[in-house]
Image (cartoon, rainbow, N blue to C red):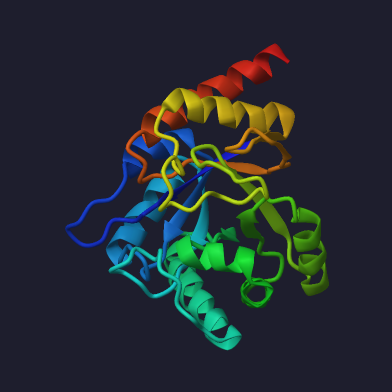
Length: 248
């Protein structure tokens, strides 16, 4: 099970996250592309840091919303959504190529990610954008109880998928993330985060906020870099997964 984290989310003199500390413990870095956070210098620094630690680099595009950190929904046509993704993935991929590497997947951020999971028109536009950006480039999206439907749609488009689960977020009974505005939506206790991660790794599922079991077979686990406990939780998850694999 690979660990991924949203990184490169600083902007100018403003710092977000603990990129240098977290990077050694993850496998995949979702790098902000300038629309919700980051700038060319931050992107270049983050790409170099990922290469130093042999971490995969993914584009993390969003709505054009620096003020709202990409967490506000903005109405767009499918054509506009495709343009947003091409523009941002292209910017990061250009920096990657200058460093001798490439973007290896795309993971939408914030409200764009939430909207595509609720609106099939948005989801198709995102899938088509990624598929047309480069053949074989995967889209990372949250695993839900509708994973088979998402896999079928992606197959029609010819798009590989990477299913993601969240170690530090609460889930509702439909297998969707609880909205951040609700109390308890983000887990703060590192031990709770680790136990949820281990449940996803060993049992391919977790319990919803109400206690209902959810079968969610994920390829990767996300720990949010802007969580105050991200570093401690990531260290503990990596250690626990290694111990579990060693005893298997």
